[in-house]
Image 1: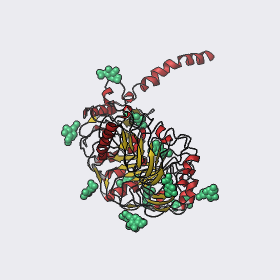
Image 2 (image 1 turned 135 degrees about the vertical axis):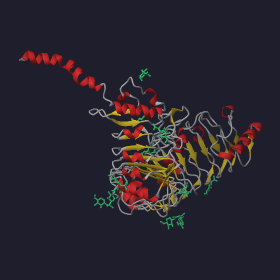
Image 3 (image 1 turned 90 degrees about the vertical axis):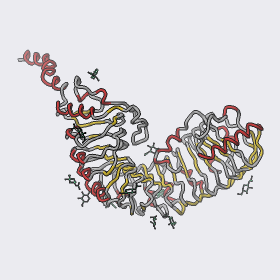
Length: 510
Ligand SMILES: *[C@@H]1O[C@H](CO)[C@@H](O)[C@H](O)[C@H]1NC(C)=O
Ligand SMILES: *[C@@H]1O[C@H](CO)[C@@H](O)[C@H](O)[C@H]1NC(C)=O
Ligand SMILES: *[C@@H]1O[C@H](CO)[C@@H](O)[C@H](O)[C@H]1NC(C)=O
Ligand SMILES: *[C@@H]1O[C@H](CO)[C@@H](O)[C@H](O)[C@H]1NC(C)=O
Ligand SMILES: *[C@@H]1O[C@H](CO)[C@@H](O)[C@H](O)[C@H]1NC(C)=O
Ligand SMILES: *[C@@H]1O[C@H](CO)[C@@H](O)[C@H](O)[C@H]1NC(C)=O
Ligand SMILES: *[C@@H]1O[C@H](CO)[C@@H](O)[C@H](O)[C@H]1NC(C)=O
Ligand SMILES: *[C@@H]1O[C@H](CO)[C@@H](O)[C@H](O)[C@H]1NC(C)=O
Ligand SMILES: *[C@@H]1O[C@H](CO)[C@@H](O)[C@H](O)[C@H]1NC(C)=O
Ligand SMILES: *[C@@H]1O[C@H](CO)[C@@H](O)[C@H](O)[C@H]1NC(C)=O
Ligand SMILES: *[C@@H]1O[C@H](CO)[C@@H](O)[C@H](O)[C@H]1NC(C)=O
Ligand SMILES: *[C@@H]1O[C@H](CO)[C@@H](O)[C@H](O)[C@H]1NC(C)=O
C-alpha cells in the first residue's frame, strides 16, 4: 500500500505535466486568440503616436507597440498586455495603453467578441477620429474602461451606461461630447463606481444627486457642467480625492457640518469653479487632507482657525482669491512642500520665516500680489530644496538678504515690484532658470559668464523674456547696472522639476 502511495508521489509531477500543465500552456481559447489577432491587424503601428504617456498620477509610462509580439506560435495569454483567467483561460484583461496603435476603430471590431473582458485600457493610441461604438456597452463584465487620449470623437453612446459593473471609467478627450441626459443616466447607473475621470468632454449638464457610495476619486475638468455640486459628494464616506477644475459655471458650497468624507479625504483640488464665500470651519475636521487647492474660486474672508489643525497638509494653494489675514499663520503647517497664497489680500510680515523649522522639504513659496510688508529676515535656514520663491508685488523693503543668493536648488526667483534697496550679489546657484528683480531700488552686478542665457522663449515670463534678454545684454555691456530696475532671465539646461509638475492638477494657478 505504502509503495503504491510512494509511486504516486514520484509520478505526480509527470501526471501533472500530462494532465494539467499541458492544458495550462494552451490556456487561451482559439477563438479569442483569433479575435485578438484580427484586432491587431486592424491597426498599423505609428511610432509617433503615444509620445508622452502619463498615468493618472502624472508619472510617465513606457510606450511601445505591444501588439507586435502577438503571434500564432505562442499562447495568447503570454502576449504583452493580455491577461487570462487562470481557471477558465478566458481573456479578461487587455492593457493596450500607449501602444502606438493607429487606425479606425470600427463597430465590427473583433474586440467585441471578447465578452469576458473585465479590464480594458485603450488609452493613448490614435484611433484617428473613430466614433465610440455602442458595442462597448455589450462588454457587460467590464470593471475598468479607459478610452482617454485615443482620438475617439463625437457623441459618447448612451449604451456606455449599461456597463453597470464599472469600477473605473476614464474619458479624457476634447473631441468627445455627452448628451446631457446621458451623463446623468450614466452616473445614476454606475452603482459600483470607484473612480471617474472626465477631462475636456463637452458635457452640458447638471451633476446628478446620487453617486455610487463606493466612489474614491472624482476628477472632472473642463467640462460644461453647471448648477450646484450636490452636497452629498462631500459626504461619500470613501472619498479620497475630489478634483474639479476649469468648470466656471459650477457652484460649490462646502458643507458647514462635519463631512462624512472627513476621515478619508486626502486630496481636495478646486480651481476655476465658483466657491464664492468663506472657507467654513468644517474644514477643521478634514484631518487626512494632504493636498488642498482652492484657487481662483472667488473665496473671501479670513482663514478659519480650525484649518490650523490640519497638520498633515503638504501642498496648500489658495492663490487667486480674495482671502485676507496675516500671512504668518500659515507656518503652523510642519510638513509643507508647497505653499501658494499668491494674488490675495494677505498682509503681515515675513519675520516668522526665521524661526520656522522647514526641515528642507519646502519646494515652492509663492506670496506674490498680496500686501506683505517689512524686510525679508536675514537668517533663514532649511530651504536647501526651495526651487521657486515668488514675493513680487508686495510692499517688502530693506535689502535682499544673502541667503537668497545661495539657495542651492533655486530655479525661479521673483522679487519684482517691491521696495527693496541696496546691492545685489552674485547667485551661487547652478540651477537658476529665471530671476526678476525689476521695479525695486536695487543696484549691483549682473552674474558671471556661467549665467549667460542660452536662448530665448523658454523663460517663464513668456513675452517679457525678450525685454529681460535685452536688459541682460545691457548689463553685460557695462558690467554694472545702476538704476531703478534690473531684470534678467537665465536659462539653464536643467528643466526644473516643479515646473514640469505645472501640468499637474494641484499646481494649477500657482
Ligand atoms: C499597462 O501597461 C503599461 C505599460 O504600457 C504599464 O505601465 C501599466 O502598469 C500597465 N497597467 C497595469 C494595470 O498592468
Ligand atoms: C512570435 O513571438 C515570439 C515571442 O514574442 C517570438 O520569439 C517569435 O519569433 C514570434 N514568431 C513569429 C513567427 O513572429
Ligand atoms: C468593418 O467595417 C469597416 C467599415 O464599415 C469595413 O471597411 C471593414 O471591411 C469591416 N471589416 C470586417 C472584418 O468586416
Ligand atoms: C443600467 O444598467 C442595467 C444593467 O445593470 C441596464 O439593463 C440598463 O439598461 C442600464 N440603464 C441605462 C439607462 O443604460
Ligand atoms: C440613484 O438612485 C436611484 C433611485 O433611487 C437608484 O436606482 C440608483 O441605483 C442610484 N444610483 C447610484 C449610483 O447610487
Ligand atoms: C458643446 O457641444 C454643443 C453641442 O452639443 C456645442 O454647441 C458647443 O459649442 C460645444 N462646446 C464646446 C466648448 O465645445
Ligand atoms: C453621514 O454618515 C452617517 C453615518 O453613516 C449617516 O447617518 C448620515 O446620514 C451621513 N450624512 C450624510 C449627509 O450623508
Ligand atoms: C498631492 O499632490 C502631489 C503633486 O500634485 C502628488 O504627487 C501627490 O500624490 C498628492 N498626494 C495625495 C495624497 O493625493
Ligand atoms: C457663484 O455662487 C454664488 C453663491 O453661491 C452665486 O450667488 C453666484 O451667482 C454664482 N456665480 C456664478 C457665475 O454662477
Ligand atoms: C483643533 O485643535 C484644538 C486644540 O489644538 C481643539 O481644541 C479643536 O477642537 C480642534 N478643532 C477641530 C475642528 O478639530
Ligand atoms: C465673487 O464674489 C462676490 C462677492 O464676494 C460676488 O459679488 C461675485 O458675483 C462673485 N463672482 C462670481 C464670478 O461669482
Ligand atoms: C520698511 O517699511 C516699514 C513700513 O512698512 C518702515 O517702518 C521701515 O522703516 C521700512 N524699512 C526700510 C529699511 O525702509
